[in-house]
Length: 347
Image 1 (tube, one colour):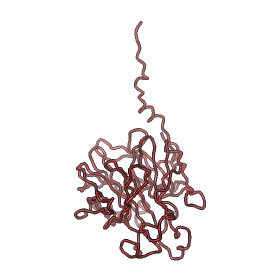
Image 2 (spheres, rainbow, N blue to C red):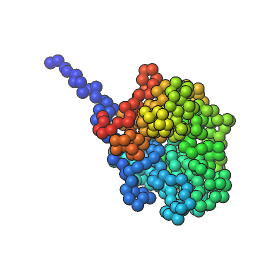
Image 3 (cartoon, rainbow, N blue to C red):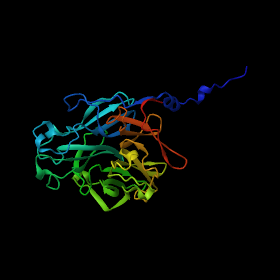
Image 4 (cartoon, helix red, strand yellow):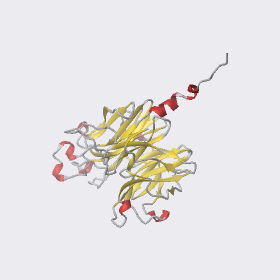
């Protein structure tokens, strides 16, 4: 009798998972922690996968700056802190714990308020939580002794993704939305938005002593001016940078805000990307300028061995302000390709 080999042998668990996974944007995500009612709107989502679980941190409502008239409100009228929520399937999310909570901090904490743009990065086996914060009721508690305009960058370290994050330290010279990434050279870098996007080496080795230092001079690697790619529409500024090393190249994603009525097709919040062979550049900006509408993203390991985006939706179809995810691909020519922003069920 002749033996037959059935096609099922080609369906590896990975292939099956990739075929079976579906998602629908915006994700059915809401949170009540630190809120008077359930909220769906978020900003600055960061998803990190550890083992079989995805963890999300984000800027929580309310997204305000310091306002004198609200200082008597809970959390001085600002975000209540940094909460972690977790999921096994990217669909059902459950509150895990507070990583930083304003109400638990002393009145003179330099990171008592704001809590914008939290990110978690795994570097050399340790987890680093970096975020923007300040103190709205004690001016002298702030690193610069002033109220400032957009907070200060702080970073803490932990042995586990869910903390506890200790030795939370001011990153002198950094800015709101500062992120971290590791280079193939073994060095750690900060990616810092200062209207344009800068990259600078950072030394985290002294964090347990309260010492975090930016090294050398910052290198401006991406300009907000789009004339370098022949696009007349120029963003007001760039923010929310994220660097991901894919296929040996550094992909620097950034968020751009544009409101010039002379260019109505460009109005709004969108994602751009620049690519380099080296962490300090030179970076080559994608000539499209806008890769997709939506932004302040993070890149994470998805359910199918692909890289995925987590981002805030910005389209006028019911997705604005809500959590969305979509996969990305790198074309044979090295270009980032994605169907984002998607709406409804995808597979």
